Image (cartoon, rainbow, N blue to C red; front, side, top):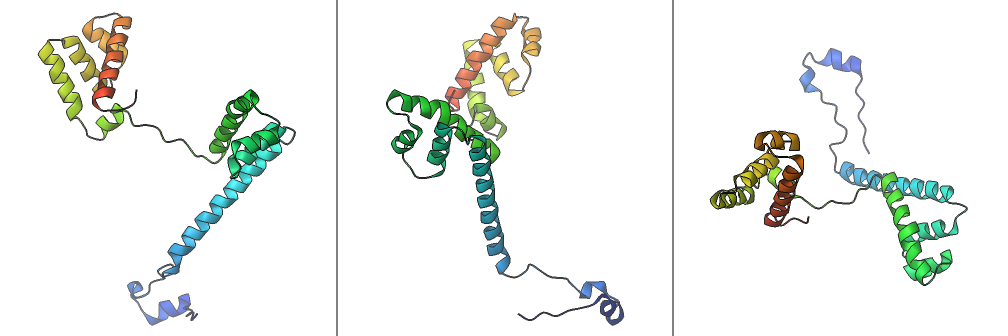
Length: 193
């Protein structure tokens, strides 16, 4: 590889225009591949660190070590449960009481978070307003002005207390209206409740 060295004194004496000289470094095609390689290495180091820390923490617990083995390799649940000394109904206990919390602990160490299902609020904030407006029109046509006010309040992120004052209703009634509103909005936006 050819390397051309330019010294600062040469820059100052050869030209008065600083725009003539550009210091270029990563404009070659190898930088992207290197970045992907470095990212893969960082991920591997993070995994090794998290697994090592977890193994040290549970060094005296065979069920936890077997769970770590199960989570981080391709071994099946039956084989891992046998290593842990759990079979039959104890296997179910081991999967729910040891494996699941350990998996959650590893995810926290690696800063991996389970994807959450989108809610009607997410879709509304993303600009999908038509289902809400359709629902408001339906309740307006039915003459249910309390529900209309509740839906508008929910869309505007008003607190329960503000809606209580506006509708002059007790808290339990406003909470019930908001519960109905959430159910209807989840249904109309086709989101899981």
